[in-house]
Length: 301
Ligand code: PLP
Image 1 (cartoon, helix red, strand yellow):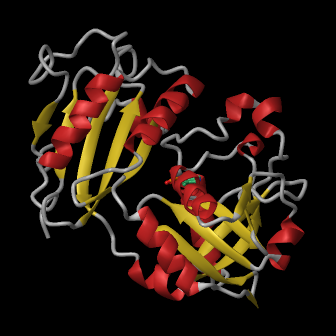
Image 2 (image 1 turned 180 degrees about the horizontal axis):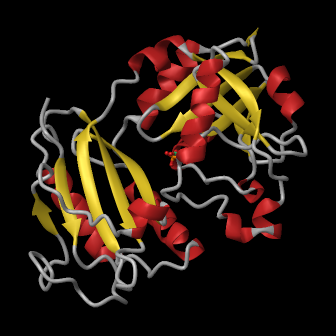
Image 3 (image 1 turned 135 degrees about the vertical axis):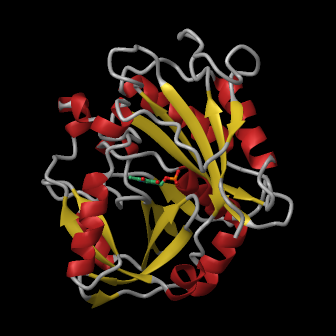
């Protein structure tokens, strides 16, 4: 397998003084050797998870949702009071990172990660980088489905309004809670998690959006519930609308999950995976529709 490509974004924000080193005064980014150390042990992204990221799917060298990811990257930066990412620099750095990957032209599925941290403590300058590597193969999950348990997130559905400092709905580097929830799923004999608010509303999975089908209606929980607005969910809704289905983003009660005709988890690199078991009870899954949806998600426009 080819090694990852690393691009250091040396001028991640227009508001910051460029750092020194390659790419500092020109493009604002530079290819670097991923085998060498680059991040300081004093970087607040490392020591406090104080930063943001995006995971972007790249198919045959094209990232169909890159603009939506860059929009969300900027929204996450605002939520954390980080300097605005320079969109032109990040777009060009992203294109350069993808183009430098030997598998970009072979049609392989690649996963790109964009990271922006608050930088070295006391320095006042953010740190940015992009890594592009061959994506993990999720074919088995897409084709066979996954078992999911619901877990209480411990926050009410209106947490984004009452306590914005909890950063719900921002894609921060602090994913230790999300991975802890996935380990809890494993202990309960499941593959993944759907978080429920403390007052009983469906939220999201640790690394994916939730999609429900009831008849001809496809629903995802409202983004007002302190969850990440999914780029894949948005593209899935385009697909369902074009197919003549209804789509909406309401508040969904946890009881509606168990009653749904079908449930999926949606995310950029994994795409749509059907849920075949919820809290130990079997759920119907529509594998033919899942295949068509994933074919749409794999199109590069
Ligand atoms: N919700 C959370 C918490 C996530 O981490 C992710 C993706 O990583 C998503 C939803 C789905 O977002 P997207 O479809 O843009 O990958």
